[in-house]
Image 1: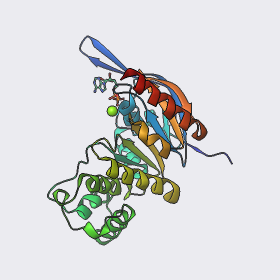
Image 2: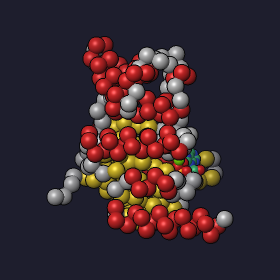
Image 3: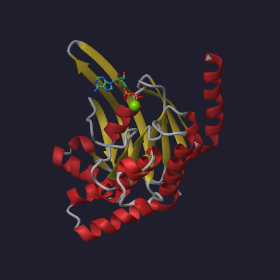
Image 4: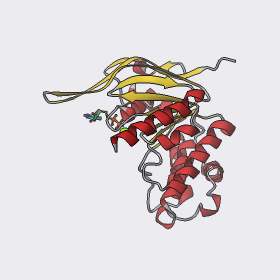
Length: 248
Ligand SMILES: Nc1ncnc2c1ncn2[C@@H]1O[C@H](COP(=O)(O)OP(=O)(O)O)[C@@H](O)[C@H]1O
Ligand SMILES: [Mg+2]
């Protein structure tokens, strides 16, 4: 069975201009991500992972090239249509949790639904359901500073999925977490991917996250080195581990 393509990039370039200086963040990216995939973008710091995710998510526009999400060419959308597409189809999780301290956890999760105009009762029901999906329903009425960092990140994931996105973009989501909390977050992503069918694109430099993914695209200096299939991931982990070992 062949899957549908949910993300397609054709010859995508991103060049940042700072006065006289140019910084080429992406150079000629061609990438297809299948619906239902749990796809990792791995590469060292500065390789262009965050730039790639924000271009897929329509937060930044490429300097050149075509970006399609769910068959829609983002380059052709006006700002407010782009914002609507982001709101309806895409969820975001970052290294920072960006929770609002004075709101309860469930109120934080409800926020994206306010922008969508969902009525109050329905908002609360959906937010509690999203909190249940990340195992935090019983802490719904606590505030961010009353729970651990790992739990705050799970709230951020609940907030990202409360609008039922087809695509979840996660940029170094375990970057601020200890090993235990990271494992929990990755188990939640696996659940969202397998059970709810949400396509996940996760950017990281941490090779320990690779075994959770179905495919891995390796970035270096703004270019794709290779996309690895599931059965090649173990070999990639071994290769990257040796690189680190020999450098030490
Ligand atoms: N807003 C920006 N202005 C100028 N340069 C940027 C900007 N964002 C990223 N870059 C540069 O683009 C390159 C890729 O950055 P980034 O996508 O953040 O990489 P990664 O997420 O893999 O660490 C880096 O050299 C970075 O300094
Ligand atoms: Mg980054």
